[in-house]
Amino acid sequence: MRETDLETQLSPILPTGTRIVKAVHLSELWAGYGHIYRIHVEHPPSTSTSTDTRDNTYIVKTIRPPRQKAGYDEGHARKMLSYQVEANFYRYYADTVASEECCVPRLFAAGDAGAEGEGQTLVLEDLSIRFPVLTERRGTLNDAQVAKSLQWLAAFHASTWDIESSSASSTTDFCPPPSLAIQTSWSGRGLWQQGGYHYLATRQHELASIDAHTDPWGQLGLHSASDLPHAIDWCLNNPTDRSGPSLIHGDVKAANMAFSRSSAQMAMYDFQYVGIGLGVQDLAKFLTTSIPSRFLNDAEGEQKLLRAYHSFLVQRLPKGARYEYDDLIKDWELALVSWVRFLAGWSGGFWGNVDWLQDRVEALLRDPEWVEGVRQRWKTATQ
Image (cartoon, rainbow, N blue to C red):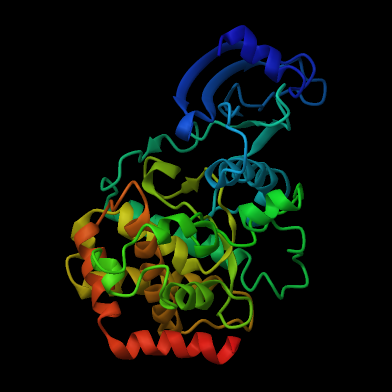
């Protein structure tokens, strides 16, 4: 997009008198769904204060999807809904969760639709001003950054703990799975009813691609003819039998993090898949994809990370709330198996700390007591 086109697109949503003096293209969004720019602006003279503290650079995220074939496409629906959810987060929820421990980008301006009738434009705080250390490559986080990431996640999850029963929270306007959202023409102000992008209702194609006879994960029960994937998904995502559901980020990885130079503060961005879930679902993706493998060399390393997160979390829970470490471990193991179920059928395959993840989940699936316990929990509550 040319700079003049970008200015034309932004002028209706920027404050009157704001002028774009420079625009730099930073990257293209996944699958060609839009672009990210850094813009430098001049604000109109302020009459309210003698000291103008407004930012002069912002990040612009423009969503303009490629032309689609006729008919329903699950991937396209998921992406477009995710951008609407992200805009909702910055507009209506970011101020609720933001704190010194849990920094998120500030929203400057937003627009709803492009000329084709679908799209989003977000003008956000340029995090590189406050958080100049961007960890864009996985496996590069140092000890201080890993610890700060666990603290950020704990603060984020605690801020909306037990969201489904909280009188201060309304989730009735939250977005259902993509197929139902399209069917009902969802256009609410909420987030995802189920946070993340790999829960079973939206990944039937990936599950169907796992062969029950020839794929090692299919042989262990992760295939479409088995009830185990459904039991695991229910235990993680059902509304009646889980501990302390909260908002989860849904796509926690190093590429979505930014740190201060001292690592004393951190911010997360890209909230396309924010919604209701268990905090360990964020933890599972983060620890299995983004931290250096040396943190997971043995069981002691895993336990150290989980106990650090748990300690941060329980210190920040609302008064009277409890989340025992044993319950966290049960939820954590379910989250790991759910993540493997997705990766095993996904065209992109496994990535991150693959050996550790596969060994850990294989051990669970080969444990008949663990597998039967999951099935019985599901059947007892649903039959």
